[in-house]
Image (tube, rainbow, N blue to C red; front, side, top):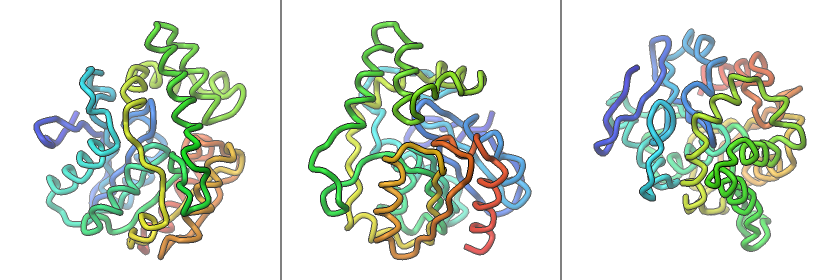
Length: 267
């Protein structure tokens, strides 16, 4: 399995295809396997690399306080620089969408085009968010507490229902449940990740052409974020993927892949 060394840590990735680079960043409890349905279609047009974030499979969870948004933003930026191939096309899903957003905000020279698939997080007051609502953090903390106490399955069910609604865990294919189990303890680190809400200033700072993707059956908090970003990002367009929940790249990979490729081949 290939990897690149970033700040002394190997960042493993899966790859397919050839040509200009396209990087994929997974969400909470995910890893490079999260994008299995995308690798061949995207690899037909690009050199696609699906990253596994620090401490996620095939790596090992370690205590230490560096499972933060800032650390993972630095890892993605460092990976792009280590490639040495100029600015890249960057796609992030859920928490990975938040990471990709921050890379584009803080390192605009590294991002040629951006795809945000239901980016996770909350909005600050400048984008209409409630002051310090903390709903997401509280839900994740409750799930992490169960996992830390050894009740891994209960914690994963709670997390899945926050992002996917009632019954989300039972509807998830077994390979996806296995992937979440492999990464379950990373949720302990995520409770300390210091994720800042999206702000108007940050959104306006993203200059790369951006595609915003949402599922038509997703939980309402994700559409709220997409609505706010669509209003203020300088160069954003939006596509809704039909018959899809928050795991839109898995629920309807055909429409997801088509929307991404149509955007990226001209961006």
